[in-house]
Picture (tube, rainbow, N blue to C red):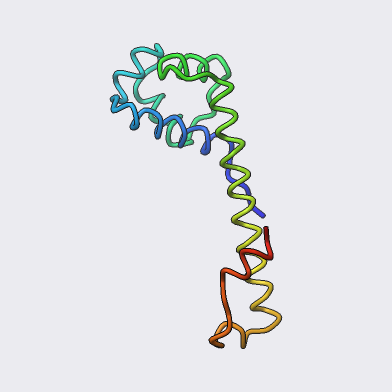
Amino acid sequence: MNEPLLRRVLGDILRRTRHEQRRTLSNVATSARVSMPYLSEVERGLKEASSEVLAAICRALEISVGDLVAQAHEEFSALRAFSGVHELSAITLAHDPSRAASSSFDPGTTLLLAA
């Protein structure tokens, strides 16, 4: 299983949080005292922010670093669970391709088996 890079997951969470707050990139960058292009690169997962920069961005968004890390953990866990289900479905079909065409094939069953 290929897990995404931590910087991409953190960036996605930061961007989603900013959007939920209906704040602009400029507004958050100014509050965090980082450049707007740098914050954009962090949000897009292109730059690996230091712990100090992450803390500044979190302060600007009024979230804790702990909450950011906890949310990242939840997303990694969800991705791992989804990947396991996907892999199990692929394995099931590889061993018995006829199940995909049969009317009795129920992807929900595969989900239950992977849980």
